[in-house]
Length: 214
Image 1 (cartoon, rainbow, N blue to C red):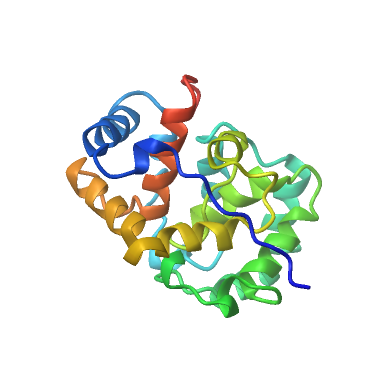
Image 2 (cartoon, rainbow, N blue to C red; image 1 turned 135 degrees about the vertical axis):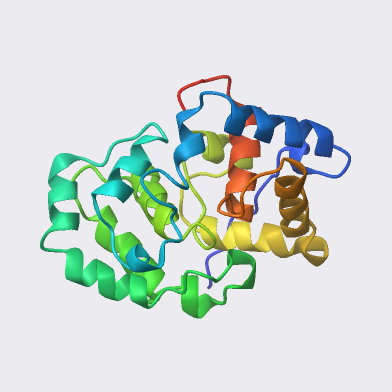
């Protein structure tokens, strides 16, 4: 029997009629001293062609803007012995593909994305939050960030099935959430470096916490 995938319980602020509130949360996050506002372009834009298919020290530092640190032993492996394997996997994951358009060959078992996830998760201290944030720095249009606030606000038990559940939420009702995220980004005047997934993440995070550390 196939495993039942989780279904996201979207926070009300992401629903219709709450656009002004959602734009306000985005504006607050990206225009005030939240360190995560630099996640997309710290050191260089994530979309820089020369570095799309490799993880380097700049990416590891960028993850720290989201209030987590890649452990030293994991960083040494990522930048050293695992670098060729990581580069090969990233080269098989299209940087221009949005999660809403991704098929199971891209995010399902055996895909390069899942293999990259598993590779990072095997490193010491690399839990689902740190792994998701590092992959999201490299493929922010495809892989959503997972953390304790996301878990709580979306009603998840853990990270398992999250990518598929988010894809389902983005596709529901003729892609209403995906269209809304695009519209919210434009209304907030944000750069296109901020992906639809990141818009959803920031609005969800801001509505679910009063912390000022991310």
